Amino acid sequence: MKKIAIFDHGYRVNPKSTCGGFVKEAFERAGYQVIMNKFDKADMALVIRGEHEPLSRIFDLYPKVALWYWEPPFWDWFDRTADLFREHNSHIFLSCQGSVRAFKETYGNYKKVHFLPQAFNPKVHKPIYEPKIEKKYDIVYIGSASPERSELLGKLQREFPACNFLICGKGYGLEAYNEDFSEIVGLGKICLELPQNTSPNWQKTNYTTYSVRNFMYIGCGGYMISPYNKDFMGLWKDYRLPTYKNYKELVKAIQDSLDYWNMLKDSELMLEQGLTYHTYDERVKKLLEVLND
Image (cartoon, rainbow, N blue to C red; front, side, top):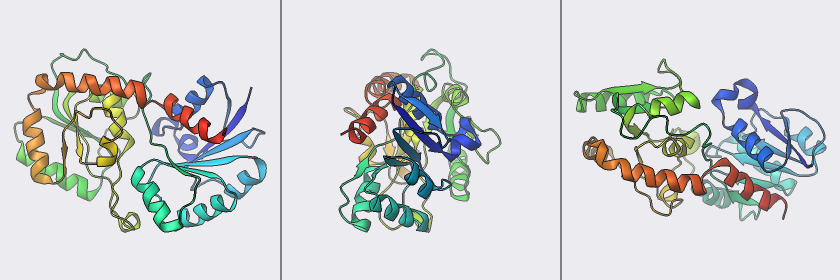
């Protein structure tokens, strides 16, 4: 049996708060023995994000090393990391097409950089309730708190005073990981996704990003309203969910979606596509095709 070593600091700190465990399980289903966060012998190593990993030691120990980076890769740490992986002629997988384009603009046409988005785990991210059950909340938001997000959520609460909001995530009191995430999604008519962080370190290009929550909402059968992202929408054979480019469009999308019962078919069709194309098993299959080529 082939062995792979996976290094994921998030999993080391809090297995519930990261998707590294889902990647581990997908490799095991693919027939690999997985060594998690240990420097034992293996045929290859996969580094997830990698900011906290001793990369030089990993390169010394393993004959084949790949990086799967889940955030926009533009700050000083990634500059050094990109140089190290290119020096070793190693594969880099980035989670957004825009990140791949920006990487090539920044570092040249490095042939071993690939697009590999995140996904969802259908054993965990799944519909909890019957689709036609009465919903407890009109709008559900799950995500880390920031001043910009809190301001926007407050504005929406004033815009829709009759709506029942559930706001949770890191910094909002109630955190939601994995099974809790699925439970909360099942309680809401609308799952709201807000724009990703736009701090200066992420603004070397105009390319937008999207969160793993986009996949998880759909896996849970949620009716998601998210920022317009042509790249994300292009991952789906038939994208059925509303998007917005500004506050006015967001308000209209919410108004049009509060009659939830008319939207059930779209959520179900998106879930079918997700189960076919956007699970961690599918991602690991693609990753292994590249690494074993």
